[in-house]
Amino acid sequence: MPKLNEDYEDLRKTVEAFARDVVAPVIGDLYQREEFPYDIVRQMGAMGLFGLPIPEEYGGMGGDYFALCLTLEELARVDSSVSITVEAAVSLGAMPIYRFGTAEQRAEWLPRLTSGEMLGAFGLTEPGGGTDVPGGMRTTAVLDGNEWVINGTKAFITNSGTDITGVVGVAAITGERADGKKEISTILVPAGTPGFTASKKYSKVGWNCSDTRELSFDNCRVPAENLLGERGRGYAQFLQTLDEGRIAIAALSVGLAQGCVDESLRYVRERQAFGHPIGHYQAIQFKIADMEVRTHTARLAYYHAAEKMLAGEPFKKEAAIAKLVAGDAAMDNARDATQIFGGYGFMNEYPVGRFYRDAKILEIGEGTSEVQRMLIARELGLSGL
Ligand SMILES: Cc1cc2nc3c(=O)[nH]c(=O)nc-3n(C[C@H](O)[C@H](O)[C@H](O)COP(=O)(O)OP(=O)(O)OC[C@H]3O[C@@H](n4cnc5c(N)ncnc54)[C@H](O)[C@@H]3O)c2cc1C
Image (cartoon, rainbow, N blue to C red; front, top):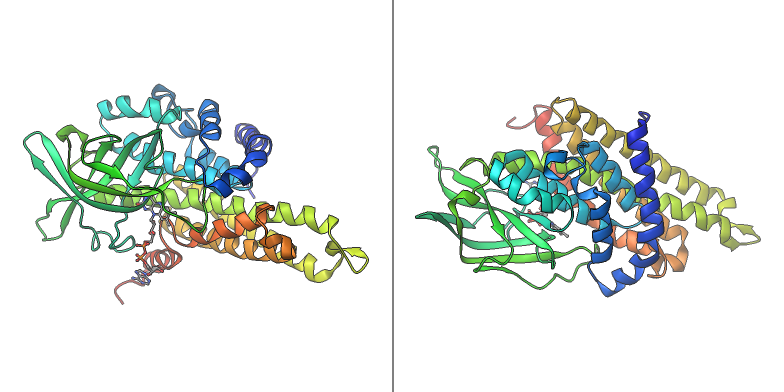
């Protein structure tokens, strides 16, 4: 594994301590009540975690995407809802504005997003399809004078209906291209715009402290200058956003996988069976060895993808590999950890039960495992055979 330099290691240790001392003591109760962790978010904002990869002139920390990934990993070792709140706010909310926005859009939104005062969201998925974009996309935005008029519905959008949600980037069909395909653009819709409604929170299997909602747009009007970047560039924008996001989700998944190792190592020293701590038995030792192997290899995969991204090299295949391997590691480790905990693994009192519920989405969100395999096969030249 590449050695982390002093800056990365300092950040990692700071977030590790925050997760242990601030998140761990309260998150179990918040999770059972399905409450959004406003106080934790406020503290993460003060630490600068929402601005890690964004330059200081916009209120960010001037770091890079790998710093964000290390942070997501350390948070997810303790809780994935907190980690995905940061991931979605930065990778899906703020980064597209930083990468594609005009000077005015950056100046208007980024200082409040990087400070955590506001959360950003990205609305791509629709009830009719998340994988098949643009095929399943129905949301439209029509230019009427100096305003976009948006109509449609988005499904499963993270951070979109909290008290501090500031802006949602909405992917919408804005016309037809010369080749007859849908022209897609991204439009920034501020929270509170008339005609924009965030439904009540979904009832979810996991990520219960994360805010996920269906959004509806009913003749929702925003100024023409809310177009993000160029008209018709929406498809390219979200492909780039999702490529980066896969490394971030891989890092989050590694954190969950590591959390399962941490919790299991503690428990097998304490729990007694047949006159020994259960860690005495080779069946348990092998399970933990396998968990460690998965975590280690998944971490190497996301470090490698991030290294290529930061070097400006193509990283699509490596990001897909990292997301796939890390999602599997999280799922497998969560299953093994709950098994090691026996009946207590099925109780909400212990974090591994929460890890089990939180792991499944890692094979689905920001591109399913099937999508990662499709991308890897395509990068190997296997599409169109
Ligand atoms: C908690 C949560 C938070 C989310 N946050 C956001 C967010 O902030 N913003 C956002 O835009 N979206 C968000 N999503 C949506 C998420 O990205 C999608 O759910 C995901 O991309 C899958 O899309 P889908 O649900 O429409 O499944 P579908 O596309 O309907 O896929 C169903 C199944 O079919 C498979 N499949 C589809 N096409 C193929 C094919 N060609 N070959 C083989 N298999 C195929 C899929 O892999 C999957 O197993 C979130 C989802 C959840 C659950």
